[in-house]
Amino acid sequence: MYQWVEKTNTETEKNLGGSTTTTKTYSHEKKWMDWIVPTEEFHVPAGHENPDAFPFDRSTSLANDATIGAFTLSEDVLRKMYDYEDVKLPSSLLNDIPEETKSNLVGEDKTFAAYGENGIYVGAGTEAEPKVGDVRVTFSRVPAQTITLIAEQEGKTFGPFKTSNDRDILLVESGTLTSEEMFDEANKDTTNTAWIVRGVCFFVMWIAFWVIADPLSVFADVVPFLGNCVDRLAGIISFIVALCVSLVTIALAWLFFRPVFSLCIFVGVGVVFCGLSMLKGKKDKGYEEISLAEDPEAGKGSYTDAVVS
Image (cartoon, rainbow, N blue to C red; front, side, top):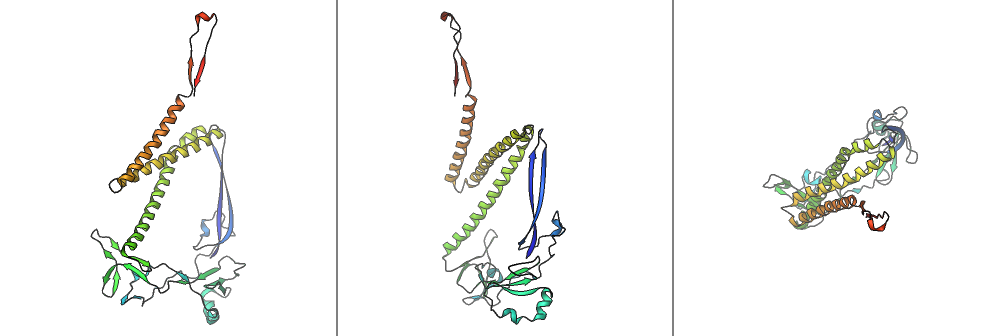
């Protein structure tokens, strides 16, 4: 649906003494959105009203007579088939819909028009000049195809297989695959999901450490430039700490399943911490001043200053 969308631009300036001034600017533009954008959530709703609902509900229809060999495919199996393709609508479709039906669906002020080869444009505007509330409806389907599934036979159909640890397994893939390939695909999906969760946890941990270190930048905000530098430094250090903690947590979880990989992670994290410790120690010794005592035989004061770096 073509709707109003509000954008917020926030600018924060640090003042002398540690205080901040935040300025928010709101702008609006029209965009095609797949969901309803509530007007009441706008900071400036006047003149940017959106419809409260779509004129049509998104829906999925399942075939009642889909089969694989002599077996009927259950709803659980059909919902795991995702290879959609566009449905090419006949050019006479719009002419076949009675005008009364069109008027009852969307009102008399809106019209129906073709949208591409697989859609219908419904609204008061046109595809070139849309108006708020206009809708683009497209159609797609899963074509007849060869599939491979791992399931439990239930009479003349298939359902999830329940394992010994009370988990349900129902795997469906397009094409002809072996059982090993089916489980490999399932493991890939599980692995990708696991890494996404790990990435989210790492990001949350990084932000948490950064927030903990935020008071340091507040103290340094007495001088605005110094506060910004401290805040960036805190972000970098928080990133390194969060990364190390995340890697150690992953290594502990893999300790009994992937001991070699876990050991490599432990060694890598140890090298990072040792490197940081060595840099800190080198910095502490970088400006050691050595003074030699006065030479009494030279007849005058003789001093040597050395800086070790």
